[in-house]
Amino acid sequence: MKIAVVHDYFTQLGGAEKVAEELIRMLPGAALHTTVALPDRMPPGLVNVPVKTSWMQKLPGMREYYRLYFLLYPLALPSLDLSGYDLVLSSSSGYAKGVHTNRDALHVCYCHTPMRWAWSFDSYSAREEMGAAKRLVLPHLVNVLRRWDVGASRQPDHFIANSRVVAERIQQAYGRIAEVIHPPIDLARFRPSPERDDYYIVLSRLVSYKRIDLAIQACTLLGRRLLVIGDGPDRARLTAKAGPTTSFLGRLSDAEVEHHAARCRALLFPGEEDFGMAPLEVAAAGRPTIAYRGGGAVETIIDGVTGTFFDRQDPESLATAIASSESVEWSSTALRRHAEKFGIDVFRAKLRVFLAKVGAPLPDAPVLPSNAAPRAAAGSVGIVPVQEGIPA
Image 1 (cartoon, rainbow, N blue to C red):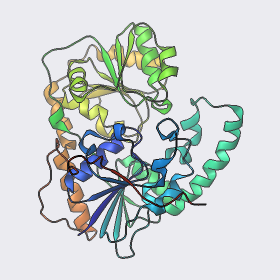
Image 2: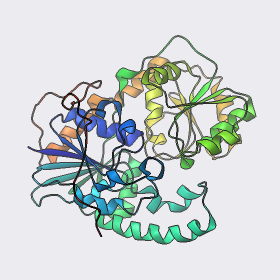
Image 3: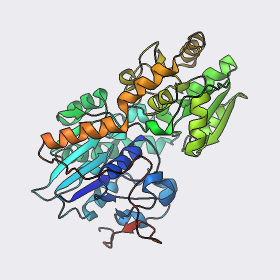
């Protein structure tokens, strides 16, 4: 069976990219396709994996302006040649579900969420800095994109959702039923530590809808030390809001992330996420999460056992939850045991069962361990742009 994995784009590092990475580890013979792949923004396990990209790979300014090209991604999908594949797995929070496959091929979409900027534009853009003209024009363009998205949702034969809340969104937006299979957590990366330091952490891409501003403001109110790990387009705005107790560390190595995760007082998780892998990664390191009660967090955090919630997205509500959590004796053993329910082996087993159920049983070929991935030939840069020109 010839298998292709198609991901929206590799222009940022987040949970969706970790899922795409795991699909390739699980299916080491699969071909990887995407619209755009920036070499320094590939997941570590995919750095040397051959990637077939679209004509968008050659567009100027992609690193800085990939979000501004949002209307071009649907036009780029036809240049991804998926002929000859028996099984196509799309990893999509945007476009990849819209790829065209052979009539006899089976297309399964692992959906991280219906396109957020199309279906939740008002909340997604509320804290984005944009001029009056852009705010006037964008809603009309987003409506065009939403209509395309509904049509694209008919391409997959089956949907998998990363959480129950995303399955509900898929039903509402597309009228499709989705199986829920939670994303894989790499438990081997994290270990509890007997050492404890006096700081909180944020572990996230810095984009406005994740509400990192609430974590900064709450820690400023309490005089608590906060380490912000990650980078993104919202960094300048957040830096301007930060008080003296907040430090921005940018992107860190896996070893540095693991060090801080195991020694922090807690992870602060103030946004409403589709799923949210960070609370489970930190739980695997034996530390709790203080999260907004909404989205995928309610499926992955046990109140009073693996973390605690706050109910209003304002600094005072989060500050109250932080102060309350400091009187709790958190059990690293209970936290780790909970995280193990979401490990890579659990993900692989559930995905295999689902694929067999829909008519694509996987052969009993060996899968690669979580710290390995297929590699290109020596000297290969891995990324292979297609030759088609930009459509007229």
